[in-house]
Image (cartoon, rainbow, N blue to C red):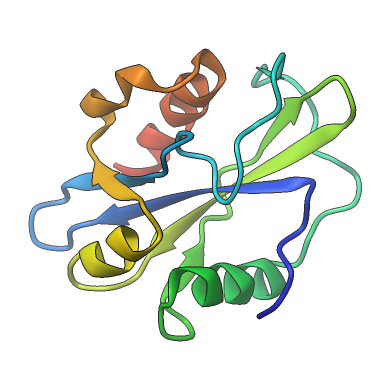
Length: 140
């Protein structure tokens, strides 16, 4: 299984093609795949993106492998660019769309995750809520 970079997180979303219903993959720790954001993280839309970026082909294949999805099931959303500041380093946050007809509910269950609407994200951290507020308009 390919490695997933430590200084990168994904927000994984599914948009139903017939109804435009947007749902986010939510893990036990929140919406950042594949590990929680460090304590004392902060997000400001004005923070510039890191100078060194990860190629989407690498992290999307790694994410598909972790989720047990077929290759090319995830699509990078280039309009979403976010950087979360942490006490140790800046973490890039990218948005990936799950390009299947229906959300892969069984794949989510296998890894202890579930799909939620943005209205169900109230238990997420403030940083994650701000990231969702930044991502949602891009998806709709």
